[in-house]
Structure formats: C-alpha cells, structure tokens
Length: 357
Image (cartoon, rainbow, N blue to C red):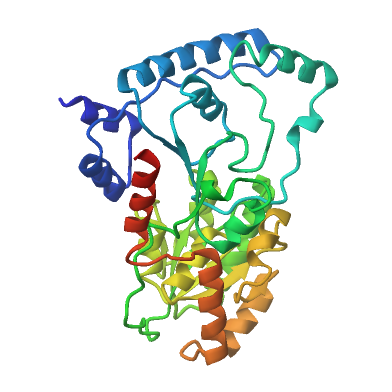
C-alpha cells in the first residue's frame, strides 16, 4: 500500500472531503509520533519526551529542507522549535479562527523558581517559554495572513506592516445567488463549548427547549468538537424524527448551505452563515471576554436564554431583510473577511509566491 494511504488510515480522517483534498493536493504526508503524556511534576521525563519528539522533527526537516513553512499558530513549542531549527526559512502564520486580543500573559502565573529555570535552559535547549502570548508575535519576522481589517488593525503598532497581509478567508466561495426557500424551515443548531460538563448539559437543554417548541421545523444538531463524544448529547437529542444529529463527517459550511436559519454560540460559523445569506441567532448565557472584540458590533440578535429566543422566533418574519440590516451585514462581513470572494484563494497564492521569490 502507498505510504500516504497508510498514514491516512493511521490519522483516521472521517470527513471524506478532507481526505480527498489531502490526496489531491499533497504529494506526501508525514505523521510524527506524538510524545507520551507525562505527569506535570515530572519535568525530567517531559524534557526527555520532548527531545525524542523534536529529534524526529529535525530529521524530517533535514530531509525536506523546506523553502517555506506555513503554520496556523506560532504559540506552540513545535512552532518555536521550527523557527530555531530553520532560522532563515520564511514562515507564514495563517489565521483560521478568531484571535483572542484580550489574552493575558500566562507566564505571570508561573512560580519564580520555574520561570528562572526555564529562562536558564531556554537558550541551550528548546524554546520552552513564549515571550508573547498574542497570536503572530512569538516568532519574529514571520508573515501574518489575516482575514481582514478586524484582524490587522491591532497589529499595526506591534508588527512591521510589510509582514501583515490581508487575504480574506480563501476557503470561502461566493454565496449562492438564489435565497433558500423558507417553507421547509430547516434550522442548524451549532452547540457551543462550555467550561464544564454540567454547564454543557444545561446548554444542550436550552437548545432542546427550542426544538420541542417548534415541532413543524426540521433541525440539524451538531455538537462542539470538544464534546463530540459526549454520551449525554445523543441521549438528549435522539428519539425525534425531526432531529438529525450530525456526525461531524460534513463540513460546517456544507451544513450551513442546507438550512434556512443558524443558531450558534458566538463562533466563526456565524460569520460563515452571514456570508451565505443565512439568518443567524446567538444563544448563550454570556459572551466570553475574548469574543467581545469580534461580536460587539455584529448584526446578529443575541439571546441569553431559550425563552427569549423562542419569543423572537414566534414574532420574526424571516422572509424579510430591511436594507439597513443588509447594509450592516455586508459592512460587518467586510470588516471580518475583507477580500473574501472568488479571487481570495489566488491572492493568497500570489502573496505566498512573493514571499518565496
């Protein structure tokens, strides 16, 4: 069997579209052996495991000898190692989600002794500590490929503007030209991620109240990836022929295009839904501080409980969008995903070629 196919089986990619994209676009794929988990207090064993892991990564880099490294984060130990091992190789950091601009410096929570030890060993081994916690600032001289003005503005006084590239979201194709027929009333419920299992179950039940209130609607319910194996999810939502429990084999974009309304909990998916001309509602007890920046001006109704959201659904005429609402949505999408459209992928490729050449 082809080595790539063996790797695909080891990774066990359930989404057939993702698997086909890998087969089509990558000549080879290498899976690094993960280092085993160790107790947090066993610093020596953890260092040994890191050493084995990065020794393997170093061998891969020597064999490939890359002319460009593309990553989706520079806040990991692996990212810092790549920079240290290939200091002259250009690096691109792609934005794939909302950036947390309210992040606090985690290093302040470390004990004085641990911080001192890490500072001593850092120059001689792997760069264990990150100077900056903000996305895109840990690695110096790396290029940032950002969605739009919303992402770029906070970096203007923190990074060389020549390293900031606004590319839009190259994965997003233009929305369908024809609107969805609202007679079917199919609703996609994208359940959010709560901080504990008890709060997650409460979140499930809020969505369940909405579903039970509208027996004539059809619902697709998708759990957050962090809880996709939670046994409570199917227990709560199964047994209703009007409910389809999504198994994470389809992309969120595909699901959004199948429905008329999206109910979510302050996620990137709500921007996708707006982009595809869908109505969007937010359901969550409170908005996280890290998401305030992105959703404070969003033209998306927000409800702290299912009761208020149900009341809104009963009173809302979904067929109508005023010009003011349409204008606000387009302005918001442009702020988030500037340049996103049929040419965004090509503009991203052109920016990459300019960096390499």
